[in-house]
Image 1 (cartoon, rainbow, N blue to C red):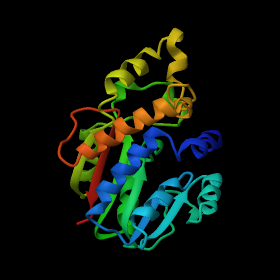
Image 2: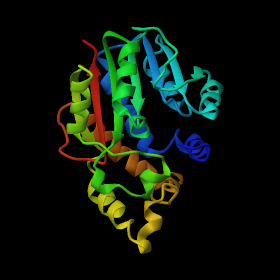
Image 3: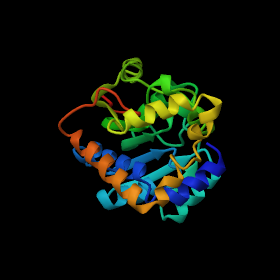
Image 4: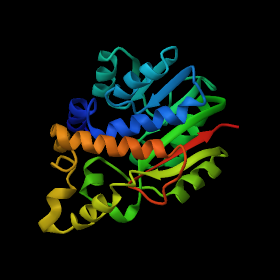
Amino acid sequence: MNDDLLYKFNEVERFHWWWAGRQELIKDLLRENQPKKILDIGCGTGETLTFLKTVFPKATLFGVDVLAEAVRFTIQRGHAAKKADALNLPFKDNSFDAILLLDVIEHIKNDSAIIKEAKRVVKPGGVIVITAPALQFIWSAHDENQGHFRRYTRHRLLELARKNKMKVSFLSYFNFFLSPIITPIRVMSRLPIFKKYGEYDSRLNYKVAYNKVINTFLKTLFVTEIRLLRFIRYPIGISVTVKLQKV
């Protein structure tokens, strides 16, 4: 991710429907663990840490990011953060109860290595929560603009868990309700005439959040979908999540 995208995220992350849904997901996945010390790898603007502070007010929160501007944004939000490579974390073994890799591993060429490093710094019994874009067949300029190497399937995440000898305690696709709309748009955006719809900075992806009516509707829909994950698992979706436990 470049600084330009980071500035865009800093503008909209507090109210954009997609981030609201992902926050709900992270809250649900961590609630049963009640972590006392949380590390957000690839913390971006620090807004996730701000949200987590409201959910786990007694927890110690820390963020790392490879971008200096991301660290600056996170510190401005009042959180502890430092510039660091996700493949070489500046922490001792068994330091955290929970680690977040939220839409991070798709930016790393060696995705197994980042999970191995996260496993090193999480305590035995602790968890690593991962979210990632799903389904390689909808690859588009949206992915290229954000510096992705790949999109994921549940099978690939299971393989990463097996390779790193971690227990899978939760696994599902999400952003399911909107997938019948988003999928054809992403596929069609490969054609020159529809190319603009695949750009991240398009009205469909970024600027839509400034329309309060549409953003509120999408937020309600997405948060409702996430809450249903307490009872069901989705067979497909634009994103995928897994919670790994160190045994």
